[in-house]
Amino acid sequence: MPLRKLPDRHITTPFDRHAPLSSSTHHPNLIIFVQNTPPPPQYHRPQAPMSDHHVFNIGLALAGGATRGAYTAGVLDFILQALRDFEQQRLEDPDSVPSWRVNLKTIAGTSAGGITAAIAMAAIGTSIEPLSSELHPPDPENNKFYDVWVKQVNSKALFDTSDLNPEAALKDKDYDNPVCSLLNSKFPAEQAANALLEKGDLVPPPSWAKDLQLYITTGNLRGVPFCVSNFRGADDSLSDLRMTRHRDWVGFKTGPSKITGLQPLDLHSKRGSKQWDGVRQAMQATGTLPAIFPVAKVTAPVSSYTKKFGKCEAAWPAGMPAEFSYDAVDGAIFRNTPLELVRMSMEAAGSDKVVLTEKVENAQGAVVLVDPSPSRQVYETDYSEQKCQSIPETLLRVLSSLILDANFLDDEADAVENVNDLSRFMISPMRSGRAGRQEILATDTLHGFGGVIGEAQRKHDFQLGRRNAQQFLRSHFVVPLAGAKSNDIFKQDAERFATDMGERGKVVRILPLFKSAHRDCATPVWPTFRKEARNKRREELHDEITDRVKVVLTSFAVNWGLYRRGWFPFSAVRNWFVTVALGNICKHIMKRVDVAIEKALNNF
Image (tube, rainbow, N blue to C red):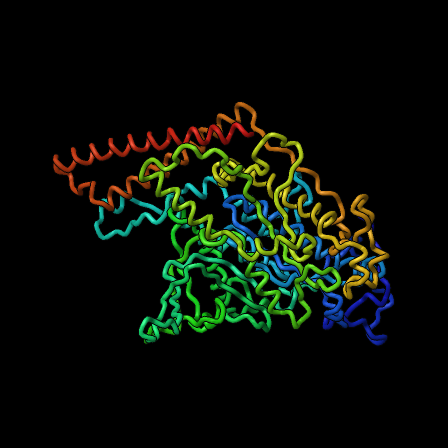
């Protein structure tokens, strides 16, 4: 690599790296050689921040989707790269970029989306190395999106049996060996701990709002009590209507906010510090699918529930402690798309020029929904036969209906009449070359847990998320030129940066792509198995799941007292019968599992 001699003005003292040497300390014979390599990109806030009138704010709503979270992580990976390169290009060549800025104002997530949102919050100010190509994956330590969703979410970690020890429980009656989940109960906590480890400085880049907000949804099994008074009875006496709300969320703010219930978060603090414990709790809670993972405990100040859900105050009983704790499960059960939280956050900042509106000339912000698993189910047209013919079928149908109804978005349905609404955008999986196939994501199989098939499947979805995000920013996250000319944010440079989109006419890209974000993200190759590799992977999954099923069944048997302690003949015979029975149950379960695995592998 060539070497070059630095000019005198670049020589610095050992006492002040940023000050040039004075003439009294200058050494004419001193020569310093450095490698001719470009410096790493640095984030610097402009000394004269641009007026709020020239800032377009976006809020991200990240839906859940089990291991489909790899797709959401890929989308976030590219959006953050585009924001970074936009500001870096402004520093290097201000005349080559438009005058407006794009700020990330709010991030809200549910389940897998909540985990990804927390990773994004923790990544502020760190140097995220994007995925440049499938052949050159980033260092996991430099990209937590990739590390968590491509590297960590694997079958060995999920089916690990180290969280259970039925043998020790059988020998020692005081040994605690509860079966908290069907999968490895340690996985959510370990994932949350690893995801929030930071590397590098913690200086927020200019594309992140100073008053950034994070919302993570949870299912509150304890519930929040409410009491609606002033119900008049037949005798004109006043009565109370008591209710309990279980759809909950945990919120954090990095600056002042009009939203009540948000916990302060210092971005300059270490991610492993106690201040980030609340983020770790919420991150672990939002992904705890009941029975699949153990419930998580969330603790929040009682004061944070003051008008948290509207004008009605929580009706706490007398003697309520200052801290409110509850058992939490997957937030997707009650609401899979946290659109209302993003809208609430951005509309509350209306006085700060964050305006969500369908009128182009007034729009100063937008909500972007990232949904890796939009419903593609065809509605039943033939319902001549009764579907619920047994008690289990009826109960499952009722449970499914309750979850689907809880996820119905009334506000979004009411807004359907506004066909020109530019405050709502959506990124969802799109892929060419899959005509006639239901699966667009490689993790779509196994009801969203197809990521356990292999790393290639998760990497495919991560890269597809990046490609879809790039296509979205280029072709869909745009403003018609006519509307941009009348908007205070875009009108100064609208004509200069307009792009002809053919039949759609000229448009202005809200977030133009520069530098590395401008290079095309290739469509990832659909992962496939050779026959030998397919058989090997089938056997590996069979063995891993079988081990997990055996340990779970044995732990249940020990906890329920089916096994007898001691070596008396009666105990030995009884234990032998229990072992045989559990073995038969395991074989029956694995027959069904093997069919599902075979069906999933046939997609590759």
